[in-house]
Length: 112
Length: 114
Image 1 (cartoon, rainbow over the protein chains, first blue to last red):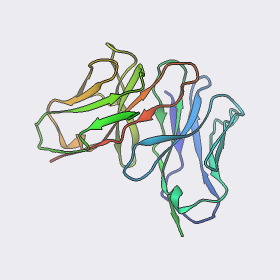
Image 2 (cartoon, helix red, strand yellow; image 1 turned 90 degrees about the vertical axis):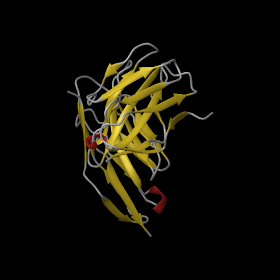
Image 3 (cartoon, rainbow over the protein chains, first blue to last red; image 1 turned 135 degrees about the horizontal axis):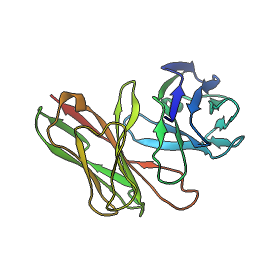
Image 4 (spheres, each protein chain N blue to C red; image 1 turned 45 degrees about the vertical axis):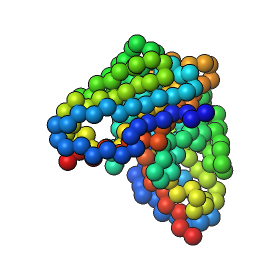
């Protein structure tokens, strides 16, 4: 079945460091891809999305590019801040009413 | 707009007790979902409802029942709670118009079963 694999955390970085969180997927066809973020004590919020190959999603300094050839959607940020500390989830979904399929999440801690 | 609301925020149950988790959305969305979140497991889908009057099982439906009471409300019931159901439960909803990709999540219900 369809699945999403994320790098395991936790990831601890110093402020202003470069961030990469790897995400690969297994799916038949071409799903839409998402990154969600969960801040402590809150629900999930959509961070960015890409709906077709080579699309780049971006938001709040984060970017991810839909790579069909490597079935990947890695999340990057050039300079992280303490306020970016959260759990990040990669997810995929096909069209119609199909639910999101989530990865297991990666916890990021940014220290000053 | 309140978005997706969930009640209660916290609950402690004894093994064998029953309870219903409530979820409501005010965005006129057709699709609604219940997930559970456990450490190291990410979010796993329990049940979902593509429209009022329909429900479908997700990845981990055993021990749960759901009711899509109307378009706004989607409740999750534990008939006989077990310690394995200790988790954080999230409700979500999504619209159906073209390009409506985002699922909106509620703040969660933290449930402990002793």
